[in-house]
Figure (cartoon, rainbow, N blue to C red):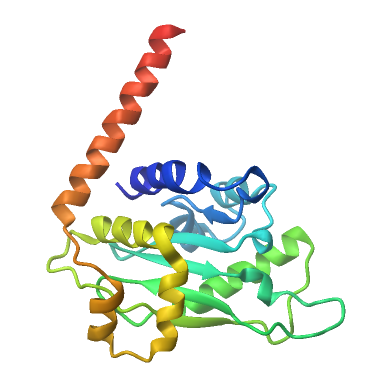
Length: 218
């Protein structure tokens, strides 16, 4: 579900609407990418394939769907370029932001370390140098909580849609100093998991029918 929904939303809402020279401002990894890193390390076949010819430090946002013990949540790494060492040695005015969108609202300090380790490894691969004090500023986005153990897929889809629509809104909200419940009221509309499942099913069916028509024309 997550693979189909993120792929569908990306094609409709991100790639289509940004200019050709900025189409790599957002890089979305597949739903199995982080699973393979955890299982096999950074030099496994899937990791190498997905990172081939990509410099993540040229992206404005990196999207990582993460599965932990059967539970899905979403990681956004915003402005990874702030981790880089500049030619003059000057420090960037802002920090790289690592946003955690988790419908169980579990503290994810360890994932910040793991993502940073991945970025350090990627920096070596693409031949760039990180600042000696490079680190991500961790922010757990106050989110609606799922009421069961199986709705994390629709919640991740919902979080990604929210991000695609207006990430700047959520980043700005960090400065409002609102309590978590108030933040949700202001920035996070109510979620309907059943409706999200229905939307994803329609999107998958539409793409399947379009693919079938192409095959029939061939």
